[in-house]
Image (cartoon, rainbow, N blue to C red; front, side, top):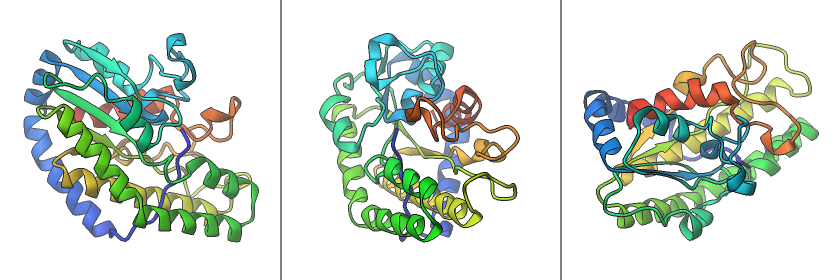
Length: 271
């Protein structure tokens, strides 16, 4: 996936309040919701963070979408055996790709939907490349451009996707997943200054705030991966995110552990 995080105008305090509201309700209803979803059907939408890029074990039939059997949607489906499971998340997907090519399996019998989307729209790949290979000033300028995009454009794009999901699967419980912070800040990190790492993390928090806000506006659940990825960022001793890798498209994506120990628990709690 190519994902740029962007600082929106939503405050950290507003995000905290939003997540608290979701957590209070989901803890009590999680068991009933999961059982209902398994009895009906589960559809996994989104970008490479949902497809499982970086986790390996890709389904050859998914081609360039690189859907992994170690991705959290596949792991959840294996554990809960829903009546049906459609996995349409795809590497590189933007909001428009979800609307044009991923919603086909949704219907009135769909009980559960998961989605991570928005980072590619905001230009994640270009921003990360700029920050890794340029100086601090150029990196911060690129992040500022992305923030303008998120504030002005992305909320409406998310609204269109979320509205389309509701229209096609009106009975579904929808869980929107955010993106983890990338870097640990209290350790040295080759090639990246603390200023760059801090700005990238702030941008990740900002895009999550926008996503959480728009999810709440549609009555969807929000799953915050930072509750599990904390301590496992790039530059930590046990990172669940790749740094710069080969193949390059796996860079800055969750490892298999990031999917199974980072994303799967927060999704299961919210499902």
